[in-house]
Image (cartoon, rainbow, N blue to C red; front, side, top):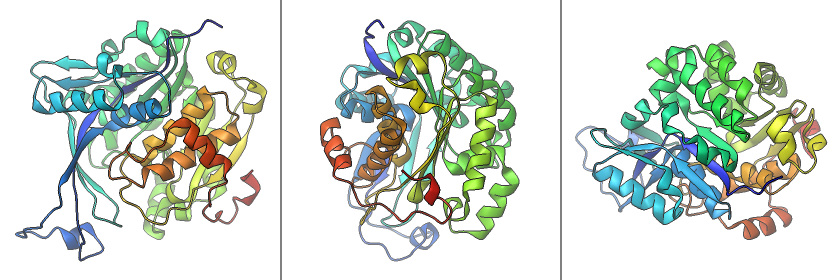
Length: 382
């Protein structure tokens, strides 16, 4: 096979993450900490790229892969800072970004007190106008893999029943590369939350080799009654979900057209289910048979102290994709996925805690401590 100039193109949602640094806090919820009329003394601020492009792209670069980034930002102060930060983390990869006069750069203010689930104040702006014309297919064709992230935060991607998201993924597939798709959790009361995601994914997944949603995202979109049931009865969906829940969701996504489904399950780990491999994915893997008709569960790595969980899912995806691009079998891809997810938690941003590829290989080889396997998942572990 002809050597490609790039390992991966990461496209889609990109923003500037502004994360105020909390010291010690009194309270166990956001509402207890952020009280109206209060002056809360902070300890600095972290300003970094965010979104799939800003997190997964630089993470792949950190893992010694050749990456190009494709997203949109405005010609404004936030856009200038965003491009500067992307250049710092993945030099040269930011050349694929589109800078659009008259549009505002997307940003998120990340409220992440220590030990408490984070909250985002998000402004989508330039992401809402991202369309198929913003994907450079010549660059895509020179890559081995095309990863697209966060269509629920990009208005044109979920409008018109996902017609333009389908166009993006179909065009990438026709360029002869492995295609990969990640989601994000929409606000249930927003236009994205009310969109018909069953219909949208039904159009998009036939052009997707790797589908990598979180459990919350895919259950919200494809099994809303079960989502509501688990949301009401467990601390998190991952604590209440069963192997049958994950299998049913994965089987539905495989029936829609995906070849490999990996469901990120937060603090308990990740679940994989596959069909028979085809096309570019089959040609890229050293042993395509090893990916046929598989079902695995990989428990999360134990983490004693969490600095910040921002971008943990994106880092985990980078670990999986990097292992795949380096020829690893599914069991190892899942091990690298959980390793990168755990590394992410050690720093206040999405990338600073990640190690280079060889260091991560050594870490995985050492057999890091793992979280307990939830009841019913034992038969799916390696």
